[in-house]
Image (cartoon, rainbow, N blue to C red; front, top):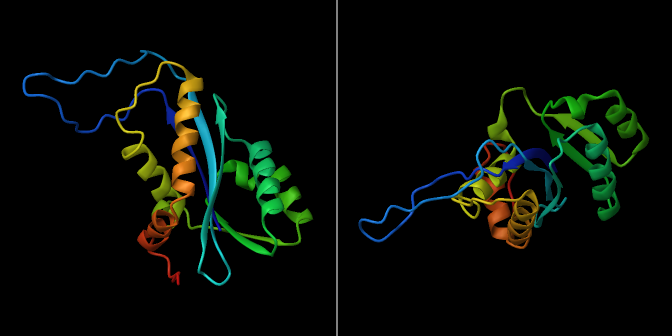
Amino acid sequence: MFLDESGFLMAPLVRRSWAPCGQTPVLYQRGRHHKKVSAIAVLCVSPQRDEVRHYFRQYADRNINHQLVIEFLRAVDKELEASWCLLWDRLNAHRAKKTRKYLDTVDRLHTFFLPAYAPELNPVEYLWSYSKTNPLANLAVHEVTELATVTRACGRSIQRNEELLRSFIRHSPLFLRLK
């Protein structure tokens, strides 16, 4: 299982688009607006390596801290029926004393840190990249609630596309073969 966090800003990630000749497309957005939607997600590979699942939560206008990480891990633990191994980066919330204290109470969970400065090893990074550059590209919203609704719908559509989830894992240089 791989875990990572990301943020979705209200300012659009502008990509190339099509428009009638001579009519430049214009994206209207709120200026000087720093609200966002933070998200935390895991990609789970079944022990038989034949199934890939995606769990996520999002938080409007909040930063991911150790409390939110612990809440998310509790929710994921309720979903899983077996022991699980978690690989994640060295975010301060992952190394916090309260997080480590919680991890010591969960017998079924084993955690390992990915190497520092190696985001390419985490398949969830590819999930974030895909989300921001494909379904959410050129999206200019005016309210954080609208951004939360759109990012949730995007996450749910990715959640249902197992072949896409598999592609994130295959793209990672880790030695993990799927069936």
